[in-house]
Amino acid sequence: MFKFMDFKMEKIALFLGGVLFGTVGIKALSSKEAKKLYVKGAVIGLEAKDYVMKTTCCIKENAEDILAEAKLKKEEKEKNTDEVFEEIENTDEI
Image (cartoon, rainbow, N blue to C red; front, top):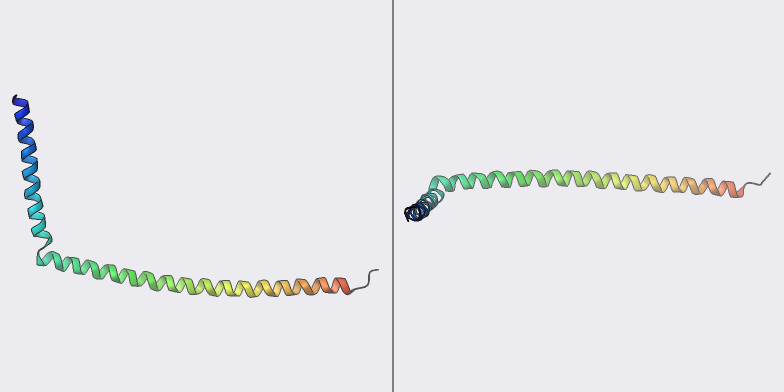
């Protein structure tokens, strides 16, 4: 019976400690200083988002330029290849 009472008291103590910790935590998280900290954290997050978006945009533009140039080079290569085949077809066989 003594072990059961210790177990029960331990559970009650843990519950009361959790309630106390939760109450103190809520007070701390809703304080003016904490709100200032949250605002600073949000500002840092928004600045980081803006930086990432600008960098992503720049990378996307560069990738589009590379793709456009690669398509032009491919078209030129195909045109040159077609010209070579036409010359071969037009020459008289020996």
